[in-house]
Length: 110
Length: 115
Image (cartoon, rainbow over all chains, first blue to last red; front, side, top):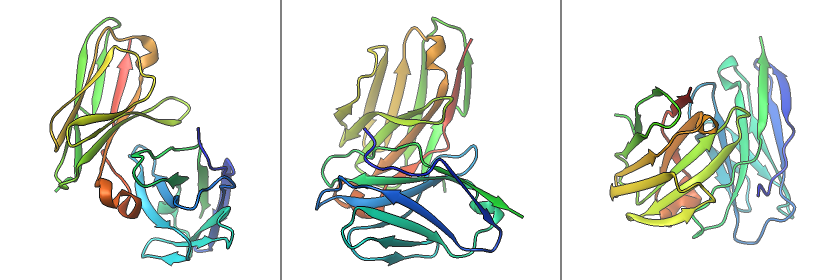
């Protein structure tokens, strides 16, 4: 059911930028791209979302390809607290459904 | 204040028992969800209620029955518990008309262990 594809795992050094990729080649024109992360032993938390344009917030940046078939979540300076599973999700307004895939497990090295 | 709360946090029970998990949100949202996360960490939607009306019911055994007494509460009752029901259950909420813009808010989870 998941309509997104992400690498199973990635590693980053502390205080370095991290680029987490997501492919969503079957995205429709109305689908929003959402990113969530799940810290160990916690529920998922919303990180950022976008439709067509790149987005920035206090947690991260979201870069969306021009054809919208892929996106990249950017953590500008990874900290040990950013170690989590990051999920890329497509959400179609009005469907009530957020379909989580397997996500990318990010490991941050001190 | 906790936005989405669940009780209990841990639940250990014997096979065949009936148990309930409660969820409350104080965000004023109109849509609530139950998810199951199994041992492989795959997060799967089970149910969704919008304004107390069931709108998503994903191939979940009849032993699972959600109940929404009001918009702020969504409970999950499980009959005749089986070993395979062991998982972490997450409650979430969203505001439907802004869900695509604000996403979902999740509770801390309830870890259910069936012995």
